[in-house]
Length: 246
Image (tube, rainbow, N blue to C red):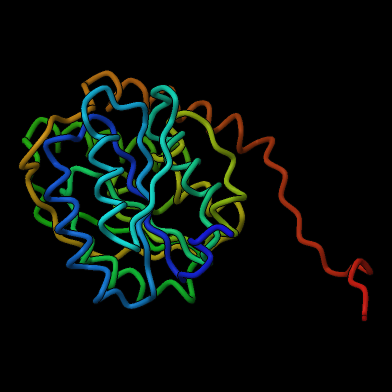
């Protein structure tokens, strides 16, 4: 039995070379889980880390009954890690947060207040602690993305989200998909809600994003999304006779 089925919420945490951040991650989630608004567990996804991240994940999960992990054979990227988490969890709701802890697990409760009525609830980072250059890149990328996709998300890059697992599994996944989750949920006629959340400076480890994968990559992905949207298949079954009355 997949033990994530015992919880209402499974939180996906992609991990790539975050050895220095592991003690803070362990504390953040051991503090949060007893206070979670829904019964929750954590699913760490090791994205082929080359440092001691996997070793430390094994030790953390052995110490805490609500910690689980899966580990890739090799690095596959952030979108692949999120997809794998969604594929593996069996809880009705799935959350996502980055391992850098620039957002807080405690703020999941702010999002969970709206999850029953929305297929996706996403954070909006307030008082961002990034550099001015990084904030500028995000502002330009968000503006261009909204123009290309027509979604209403103010901060699609915010790494704090909660979704209905069923809706998340219907999302067409591709590299860079994590930047388009609101638009992809809206393709299903899903409802989205944006909630202000706190933002913190990174205190350990190093950012995995460069100018290229923060600006040029998303620009190209917008054109891929436009192509995919014009060919997206969406249907709703109104009646069937598949069920058998026993």
